[in-house]
Length: 276
Image (tube, rainbow, N blue to C red; front, side, top):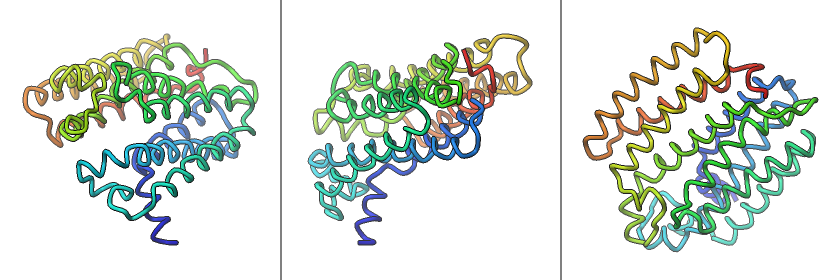
């Protein structure tokens, strides 16, 4: 049993799952939720993200075996694909049920978030529309938090746009390391069709646009945090542009993560300006 639990944990893509869950907690705080409901939101998102990671591994099991992915427990035989499939459905169901105390609007939005992410795993990843689930799911992040308020409210348009732009960057950055493996197994999403160089430009442009939206979108006098964020993102964008002239390296992904983190912090500390 401990071995199976450990294998399931590895199959759930724990890094991205925890990262998105942490963002949901920060957005819940920014939206004015009390500690109990912030906790519910965070756990619900964690379960939902675990379901997405698990579904990815059981759906891609044959492909991962074909390319010899030793980091995938299903591909190496550490856990049965049926077990991972069952866990993915169980965590998805738990995520939706746990969102119910936050209201039907937040529950509906979170359900759409999960469904959108699953559609990527179920086939959209191999089409020119592969970026759409990322745009939809990341764009819904601020809305789920604001709809979970005691007095549900829409998220500001700038927050939705920033979430969507982060989704674009996340998709292209997530695919870049797997270009060679995907080519061997016939996966051809939008980044693959555009190529490495163009994909790098898309990442750079979406993060730069996100910083501009985070600075000008909320309106009013810019805060010190917004000014610092814009300067940091500009410096990171210059660095990314320089690194893009060479084949993808660990430094490129570190710069991308840093730039995305700046935008996430700006979004999470927007306070009442998160509301429409």
